[in-house]
Length: 79
Image (cartoon, rainbow, N blue to C red; front, side, top):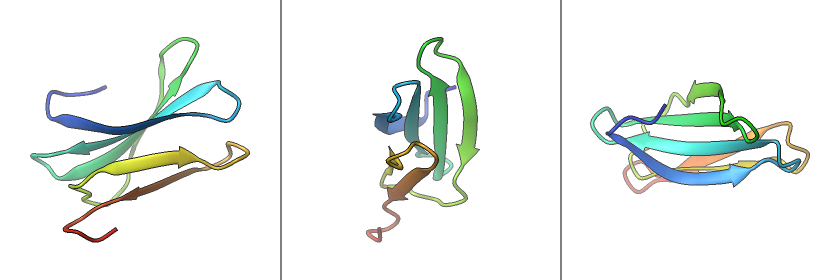
C-alpha cells in the first residue's frame, strides 16, 4: 500500500481503537492519499485520493465519534 515514493506524514488511531488512518504524500506525482487500516488484522480498508496536490504533507485525524476523518495539508505554503 505504501510505495517507495510515498511519504508518511501522520497516523492516528480511531476513537474506538479499531482502525488506523494514515496521511500520505507522494513527491513525484504531488498527490495526497488517506489510507484506513483495520488495526487488528492490518488489512487495508480504504485507499482514498484527496483530490488535492498537498506536497507539504497530509495530516489526518478522526472526528470525536469516529464517523469522519479530517485532513489538512500544505500546498505551496498554503494550508
